[in-house]
Image 1: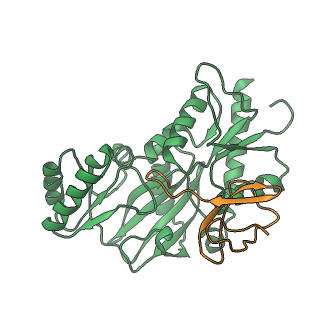
Image 2: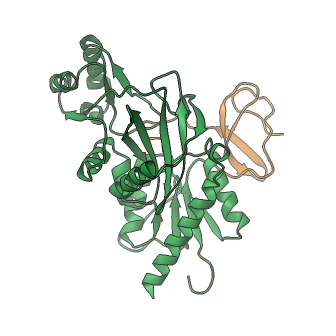
Image 3: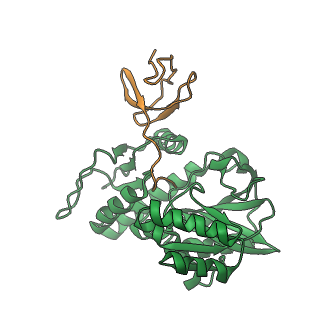
Length: 291
Length: 54
């Protein structure tokens, strides 16, 4: 990097609103930026990839692409936001759960089972209603609330017959009756920068599914929970989804390529600016370590 | 003005558009990807796959 500023690579395929805001933030600061289209990328494994950048901000839409690109880049010491570890943990709900459990972070009770029969047993251990989730996926897709044994049998049979092998690893969670909302908190580096409530009449409260966003104050309790959650999954730039149950806060999942378009005006926090600050910090830290 | 590859409607693309950006056709609602910017070229955006997300 020398005395010049860092060159930031942005690894992406689709330029969604979030990527556009991040690119605008980089441009407004005069930071040299290279867009790396993951669909055109060929990464060597036996030598350091020559991307001509000092740090890579990963914004792939496909988890598989992000995961393996980060593995190669990180393996060769190229600083990335987020790291391979964070992507691996956050991209898989079971691995996330196990990290949360490891660190004593409250999370809904979860069972994992590997056959349709044991999946039914897992559901019945937790009781109805229960929630079946794919290990990998976002935006509330294929998340199923099962209210009784018949619906459990139907959904599990569909997953068994129609799904890829990953759908035959059954991840079952207790159903947490939410107060018509959940919390999404944004953690960047060492700070919970802001949070929103996501209100919906539906039990799935993703904004991608039409939930309404409102500002949520970051209390010391919420900040502590989110900081611990971020650390548990490997740190970086993450969005922590939190459920409220009778005054208790439970961490539901952690996202590593977070969307934030609905949360900037809602919270008054310039999220892309905070992300870019963090990316530059990562580049600077790597530069200092090289010296 | 670029045309929608689905319905042939006119699609307005901002001058600050970048390659890879997603726009919607105002006529048919199709999601379109900007595949080139000078001149602007549009293609149907790929459908969401199982591991897409955040």
